[in-house]
Length: 535
Image (cartoon, rainbow, N blue to C red):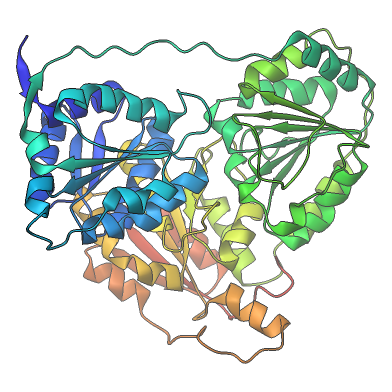
């Protein structure tokens, strides 16, 4: 049997899992890894910060479905990636985190940049390995299965620490083999109970989340909802499982108290609640304990036993969402159920445009972007508003950090999505503070030649925090900053840059930017208190 480097054994298995790109910043300790990835057909793309590199990798994952790959060198490189890895754990993103490591014998007498990287990543990953030359192929297979949820449970990040000498060690070239995994299914007793509840329900409602997206359950959800008149609410990451112009769609929910005031009463009044791949890590505390499984029939179809305490269920089914929904509705005669059209109209009115401000920015951009556009958004008041107003006609069309709520993720997510799906229109939304956190990644957009549209909500304030200060009658402190020329920053990085102050100009600029030859930053300026009453 021929011999290859342990790093090659690892890289070839990542390629077999569908990976075609890795992102990060190289250092001397990961040069063999980078070389092995390239040799295996996985492009290594230079980024400008490891957290941003991780989000670029995640953006690509949402387009092609393959695990994301983050490469970080020893010490500060690995530590820079911690924010992204923690986010991936909370957002259930399959990621392989590859870090360089000083060889153990050298570490005994040389402590420069030395720290226990496995101990740092252990609490925020599903597993952490130190690559062993003789077991490199097995460890790679394990890492992929664990990260993708193929070994059971939800997806998430897996860390592999790669000692310098191990990466170069010669090992047998073992062929790649991936076993088929049998899907779990709802049991006969549970199935009979669920069908009986559905047959009797007069006020059914469904809440779907990111695990339903992972299961590609959109078609099953649509069939179920249409057959039985079941209205659908999604988490923000579940948006588009049912096109949001559909009469049964009530859009996304989770963070907006204004949206919650219309949606929460439906869940309190429902006699059947179907939780379809719903992960409450995305939701604000107001969604805690909303329904009573002792008085209401609640079916929780999930990837893993729920230990979060956010809600209870009458029946928990650990199985894929789509096949389970199909099985439950099979043979159940539809009946007349409640009409939620009034709630749908009320939601649209609540989030209608009320003059130039953040709502007008969202509406103008949505009007300019064609169906199928992928939008990204980072954290802040603008995210809450945009996630309610931005309509998706399919899943994975609004990418964001929902579990950890990391600021600055919109730029790298958009870069990664566009790199993986170059024909897809991509637009990123960010607050001015979030933009400043990762402005250096505009260099990545320029180097890759990606015509991404970046829209900056410019109100010179950390608006969500400033709003909370005012609500609690506290002093204004640490939330405001000076006006900057964001358009000039864009031009300095080799892109297009414009500033707008009205909806018509914004829509025109977005339409122009979507067909531009490079990235465009559009700075949309408005009053810092314009979010009042809108979220």
